[in-house]
Image 1 (tube, rainbow, N blue to C red):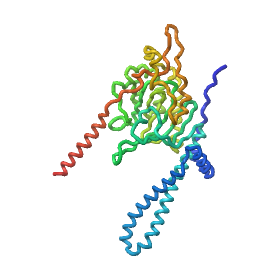
Image 2 (cartoon, rainbow, N blue to C red):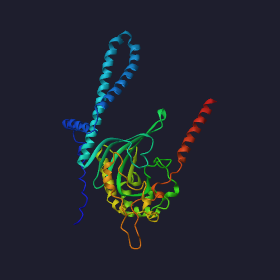
Image 3 (cartoon, rainbow, N blue to C red):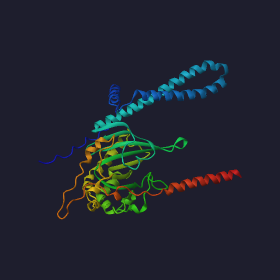
Image 4 (cartoon, helix red, strand yellow):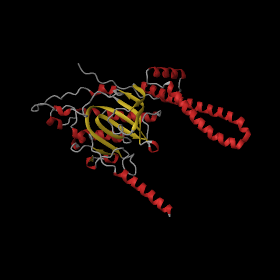
Length: 387
């Protein structure tokens, strides 16, 4: 009896992102989402209205001072009317903002359902191994659209904050996370199209001796980094047909392979959006890459053969899915040794030796130079003004 092939995903359907909103269905969706614990809560809209009223009173106070001076005794009549207008506008603005957020969730949930996927409004501190998910504080993924056919894939926006107080800075990313069949070496493709004047836009820099040049035009699109000693493994994974898929479909994204995940990153660009054209482009890119990922499932780290089966334990082995990503567990599969071969007592199980699990980071000299130049310029400016 033959093994049935995986079910094909439904045809791309983006109508929910643009068609008129049925207010009855919107209200029903809001109630169902709240009941399931993933929808908007009444307390959140109350908080929005409180903030809007606070801003309104501050604005009213500022404007009121000027009017009192300008109108004199007439201000006793105008001021109450002005207060009512300001409060009314604040409440209207808060409700309008909340309604836009509600409609956004409704549209994305409908789009996800039409394409055989699920929707989650937000997930605090997603437990993913990619380079952006352990940075800063206040980490949160929003508008998560995730599916399981033909393999687990998640589209979401991500935000974290560095620093504090006046020196705090918010960092925005969009990401696509794809579950792989087996753990692979940590490989990064730094897209050349989105780099800046000082080089990479990635939040991490890697030691230069780990960069591997590939054939053809691939180096024009990506700078590939792989752990030292894993050059042949990278060549095995990035065959010419796979390189062509990345160049044609994913050249706008930075790419990271870590453990048994493949991430596509977009800095300051939302991935989960209401733009059908963006979704069509992303679905095309993911579909083009996914069709070639089965080749990677056959990769094994020969370094584990010498160390014995026990060496396969560690971060490179699929673990139970983290909270918020339970669907991914179905795709990791059992970790079992591959069948032995003549003259070889056992074949390496899926996994990565310790030296291949993470790339070696480089010191961010470019950031230090920019900071030093800025401080030096400020000092010179102050000295010039002092004279």
